[in-house]
Each structure stands twice: as C-alpha cells, then as structure tokens.
Image (cartoon, rainbow, N blue to C red):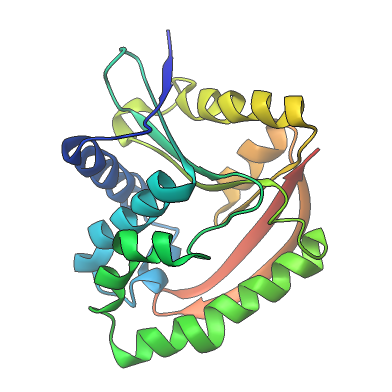
Amino acid sequence: MVFVRRLETPSDEEIGQCALLMRNAFRSVTYDTFGDSLVGGDKSLDILLHQAALGAAVAEGELWVAGPAEQEIGAVAIWFPPQTDYLITEKQRAAGWYELEAKFSPELKSWYSEYFVPRMAAWSTECLGKDTQLNSWRLFILATSPNHQKKGLAGALIEAVEAKAKAEGTPMCLETSNAPNVAFYINRGFRVRGTINLTGAGGDHVLTCFSKP
C-alpha cells in the first residue's frame, strides 16, 4: 500500500528528511551528472540546493511525499501550480535560495544568470509555447529513495496532482535529465515536447521537456 500526503506546514525534521532523500536519490544515479552542474561541482552544496527547492515549494508551491507506511517518507515531489513557478517571487527566493547563492563561486553565479536561466526560459517557450509553463502544473522535482524504488511511490505522487489538474482542465509539464526517466514519463502518458543540450561543471547534459495532456 502507498500512503500519499501533502506537507503544507512541514517541520524542520521533515524538511531535513526530504532534502537528504533528494540528495541520496539523485546522487545514486551516477550516470546523470546534471546535479553536479547545478552546484558547480561542489557536492557540499547539495543539501542547500534541495532545501531551497523545498522552501520555495512550501512558500508558494506544493510539497508532496509518499511512503509504504503512513508517516514514512520514501519519495518526494515538488509541484508548482498555475500562475507561479520556481523562484519567480521574492518570497520563494528568501526561503533558501539566497542562502545557497551566497556560497556560489563567481563562475557558478555567472553560469546561472548568463547561461542556464535564460536558456531554460527560452527553451520552455520553444517547447510549450509562451506562458504555457506558467499556466500549468509544473513537476519541478520527483525523487524516490534508493531504498524504495519500484514500489509505485513516484507514480502515486504524480497521480495525486494529476487528479487536480484534470479537474481544473490544466496541463502538466516537467523536464528530466536521463533516459530511464524519459521512459518512465512516456509510460505515464506524458508527451515529449523537445530536448536541449546544456553544459556545466558536470559535463554535457540532455534535458527533455514533457507535457500532459
């Protein structure tokens, strides 16, 4: 059985559990080095990176967790509903991003501001159309603990918000950075909308954009 719940006012302990799970999940996929680029190759920033995303989700998005027991956290999903997106408001940025950014090297700050952020914004418009991402439910992060793979947790976290999106008549969108995830989302009915090649401290990456319906 899978237990799914939204954490609207998570405790510090729950945020810590989620951040650690996210780090372990992404670092366990050794062939996907996109996370290295997001921290400029400095793995000591992993937890702060994930805490920034979690803080933004609690501020203006939705943080969902799933587990095989009612209070267990085996997978984490961060969604941003229509009319908001990651870090587009001061409230979100103040919830962890500024603390992370203060530890960036000058090179990493430039990578974000001059390369990554503008390229991703242009690519989203190219793939989905102007403002489509802003008007969608965006799945920003989906992470499953290495100890809870293949138990249906990730699928349950998608279904929880997909039900809301269908009721609203609102599309969903997301991006991913490795081939097994591409297959996972295709199998769940998402449609590939485009790809982009990016380079960072972790090497070369191919991101794939999806939407549904």
